[in-house]
Length: 316
Image 1: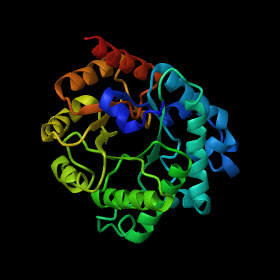
Image 2: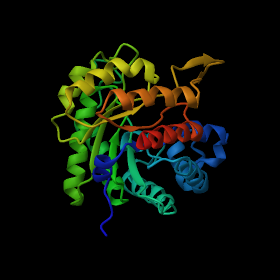
Image 3: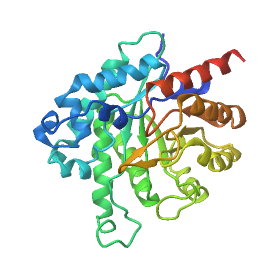
Image 4: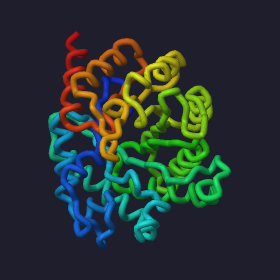
């Protein structure tokens, strides 16, 4: 029997992503000596210096009911890895991270579990005129994503996820890079492109959801999505507009509410039950929403509640 691939699964049911990686890493209170070469804050590197930590986080989400886990590679494009002195190992580090996630998925045999290659932003804003953030050559940004995507594909990721994107030009470069990596490796995987909107429905540099979707949806992506920045309530107007296009499957991965500042730390207070209720209504009202999950502030408890929502819908 041929294994069901990610897009086939999407045709058959609502897919559940995992929750936050960074939130769970913070709970472990890592010390500088826990990171590779003592590079404090290099969370992606914990997959190699503390692989059991990352495996257990992946495992906790799969136990909670996730169909997918994202690789611990949010900051593993070459530009970000250069900041920690690991840029020359971009392909290999991404490949190993995907393989680590795959090894945990393989522990679960009840149903197909999928590895999603996480590709976060470079930290630059190529559309801006900022003297620092706007000056990185476009070819360098594109290459940074292409090397990352190549490694994730080599590591058997089922999909590539361009996420938490703040600049529409960077999104375009990441999409182009992902296609180039697929061509180079000779392997086609699902391509998901997310953007991050503020509470007014705009990206950091002012691009609204309509413009972002129009720009990206015809670039050969399979799924369009929203993640991070806000909770589900603030996302709803944009979700409604995207659903009305009746074009692409939608991925909706909000934070656990809007962040609140407590002692200089961002705190997210939406309970698992409240988040599940909000996304339950999304699934019922917006049929294009085929994938849900959690971003900042979410944990396995949130995912467990979202699993109940999906399972209840099956019975209804």
